[in-house]
Each structure stands twice: as C-alpha cells, then as structure tokens.
Length: 189
Image (cartoon, rainbow, N blue to C red; front, side, top):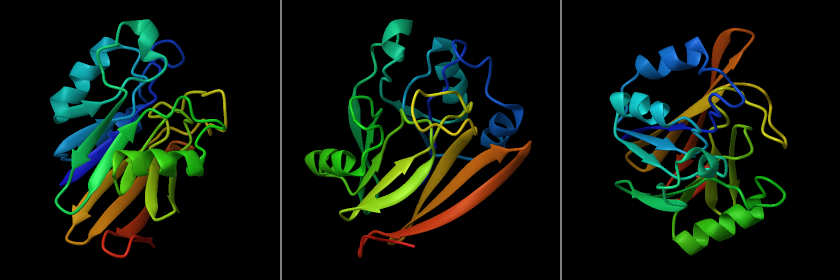
C-alpha cells in the first residue's frame, strides 16, 4: 500500500496555492490513500485531493475557523503489518515534542504516528515509535520551527518494512530522502 502524507496547506490564508512542482509530483504518482494532517483551510482543496486517491484527514487547528469541523481529531489506519495513527499535532508543547507524540501513539496503540502542525518535515524514532511529519505542502509559515520549504512524504509498506520517502522543494528543485523502518524490529535506518 502506498500512502501520500501531506498537510498544513493554509490556502488561501497564508499561501495562494500549492507550488507547481509539488502538485505535479503528487499528480504523476499513484497512491492507494492520501493521509492528510489537516489545516487545509480551503474546502475546495479536499475535492482536488480526492481526485488523486481516497483521503483520510484529521482536523487542523486552523480548519476549525474555515468550516472544516467535520473531520475527526485523530484516526487509525490499518496497514497489513502495522497500525498508523494520524493527528494534527496542535496541543503538543513544545511543537513536535517526541515524548508527547510517542505517548499519544501508545494510547492509540499504533507503531507509526503521523502528525503535522510544525510545518517542518521529519522522520524520527522515539521509544520504538516511528514519528512522521510531512511538513507543509506549501511551505507556509507555522509559528514555530517551520522551515518555509514545501514538502510531503510517501509511505510504502513492503513486506516487513516501511519505506518513507521525504520529498521537498528547495531552490526550485525537488529532492528526496529515503528512510527504511523495519516493522518487526522497530528499527529506523
């Protein structure tokens, strides 16, 4: 199963649109599911994402103000060999705190937790929990350690491993970083 991990768009309040290179890359790829960390802030963006693949989404803290309150605050996605949790990440202080995120993952009974809110892409392991953050698809300012670099991630479950491709746009060029996570040993490489 191939998942597109994406979120923190903040369109049109902070950014006008998704950068062309990011949007083109998502359109040229095939995904079984889109996993969105919230903060769409534009209801029309959801239909654009649904055109690419089915969407699982949680409500971001800014969605509340834009009539997108219908989304859950958390959800669990079952892959073949593991469970993936999805939250926005607001309410975590300091933003992206791995100790708090791993505690939430344990409460959700998941091996992998995807969150947003920081607008900074990350792949890290804490207490045997894989913590993923796709960053901001638009590179929007986020009030914390955001990078201003548009980004997303691709998660692919292959046998006992999860392949994580972090894609980001810098100086007009797309770059990729690849990490592997062994589900059985719970080790990130």
